Length: 124
Figure (tube, rainbow, N blue to C red):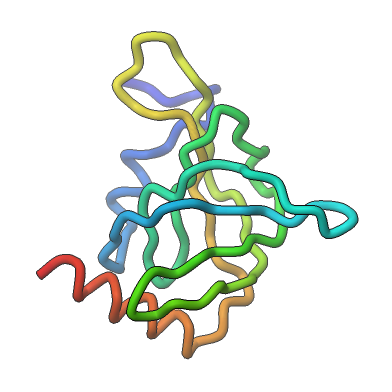
């Protein structure tokens, strides 16, 4: 099946993954005047990025600030810049959720390591 013309690249992205991923709960995005809006569900996270299930994915290449509530034992809220590296629009009867793949741009290495350790602990 071809993904041409619809920005849908999940197969390509799956082949490029270098880190384990784990599900997460909710993502909030800061926009404009610092107000917080519910944006979507973080379906998985890794040290390098995450997939957000949303009916309104941003355009590929868009950058914005996100707040990520990390679960126990991390128990902290991480704020960083993300970039949309792929998106998938809603399609009726599609087996795939609409959403977007995000890459962390300025996540500190210490937090990347903490996320990676948490993800590895979830896959045991």
